[in-house]
Length: 621
Image (cartoon, rainbow, N blue to C red; front, side, top):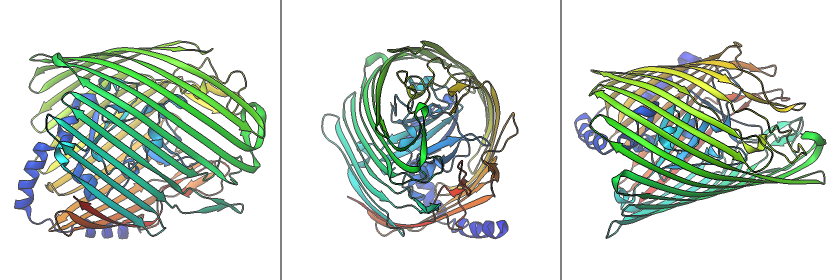
């Protein structure tokens, strides 16, 4: 069966590597002007770039289209329908380990540490390119720590000088409408705005006669105004999703779901002498409503049938940085202050509770990239963070230290990094005003502290690119939750991660890649796929763009349920009718063999991705 699927993929992926001379000219221009080349930082970790052309040829609709290509970490979804990450062979990884940026804005949150996963299905229509940093310390990005940094860069009004309208629909009744417009005017003034609305229908499943519904609807707005050295950004995300499996003990939901909103404003001012000031304000509103006649476990209340909770987060940030450049050094000095507040209110079978807390976070940091010569660079960084809470939570002083070495030898590049970092604890884990509702919190938790040793070798030539990466992760004070003790530190864990990728580029628009990754842990458990691999082909022939992707995930066992190997095949074609008008067709999960997720107290695993056919039209104006 695998051979048949591979042959089908190979046949489609090998289409039409023609028109090389014209494409090569376009390739040279686009490579030299690529924003991805400008914004990526080799010193920040292992770097993967998804260019604008990549996103357009794959007809990427949401960030999830990119996240599912990740091998480390692995993407799945929780019982209440929210995306989450896991290390290979492990159930999950801390939410705060994943940091998502739009330009320089971190999707910060108070209650759960990071709002990155709520943005996982955001539309990508206003995104120009994506840069992913793995085994990073995030010091260079001047914000809260994370080991996987996902940076999304919006389209530039100066390059757009016009707008775009995109309409999408699928065979299940889903619809998505996106539009943007950007313009540069006199006196270095430019503006850009974007809006999206979507109504996404998902496959429905059943458990004990109860419908498991994960349909979502929502929208996203983004705008910016740029004038000389000022940039003002405004954004709004809203999302409503059904309860999927719910949070009941038997996964028998009877109504409810999630309703979330995230608004932010981000102001950036660049001064002379390489000073940079950033001010931002985030507000998040998160409502969870559930009903389950078979019971929902709620902290000290035991089991209830009706559950409602509301979280309101507010985050204010001020960041000041100074860059110093000499012949051999690139030095970054910076500091920031954050005020994070969390207000929580809940109603459980008529029992009402509410509490709040706030955090003052102070940080200073420095990073130096020293070029010994044209081929050798040493990287070192140091960051000190000071956590001060309003209510009875112990103060924490944390440090991030990192050293690195980068060596280029002809077509080869070698990177070695040693990083000692930590993961901040979400405020929801720490304080509940003595009620321990809805969770049993622990105000004396110690921060999880991973130490990472990572090394990689890359080979790159005109047509070939390959890399091998390895990371050893030693985690201290890992945090876990159980109904009896609540949130507790459970000791130390060790992990290994391996990645290999090879890409052959016929020209800029025609390339094929293969990657495989593996992860293990000290317990030798396989609680999620241990092996993950992809074969991906981008092809352009005349006015047609072709994209083919085969996603492989190995078997695993969790909660007594065994999941077999899976092969998720996606194929798409886009026809450029004119320079300004195109139509596309995309078939997802063609083999109906998507990655599957196991849930506690559910007898069968549930596919993470649906079998779907999307059609879309795009018009530039």
